[in-house]
Image (tube, rainbow, N blue to C red; front, side, top):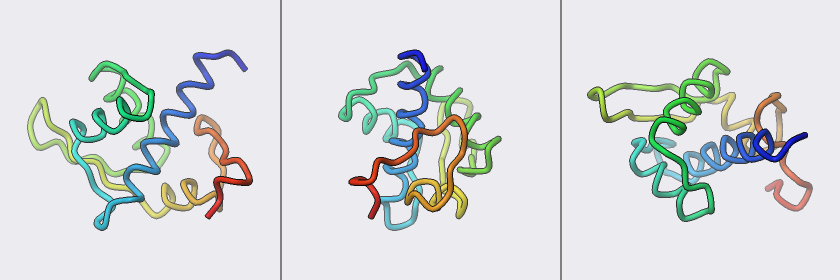
Length: 101
């Protein structure tokens, strides 16, 4: 696997974990971008939106566009299962044994 692919898969897992940590499993895209920055995944808004679209198509999140610039992202049940290591999806980094809760 090349480094860019690894980074994309890891970034998608980080998004799922950020959402799973919220009481309502929801964040807006600006807060997700800030969380990614804090965790070493500084990406453009365009890359984040591409990831959100990918995650939505995989059934891992539900997107609600509040405006052309603001998107609310909610973790789906399937997304939570991937985040917790109960299900695997190609394109999202697999949890390591020590990461499983």
